[in-house]
Length: 69
Image (spheres, rainbow, N blue to C red):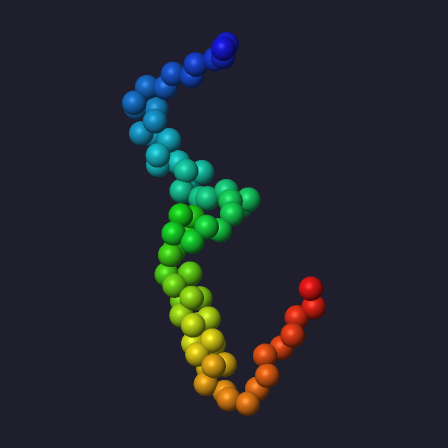
């Protein structure tokens, strides 16, 4: 396996840490809760879905909607 090895010194890497490009995520980065975005947003959505399901179950007399295959 042939390739090029890139060697950087510690000083250069520490300077890169403070670069504006290092502080901004790429625009094409997918939103993964808990990884690339805050996990709280997914928890809020889960709570909303849970409340919605509970309110639907609390409404007696309504027939569930049939979905087309």
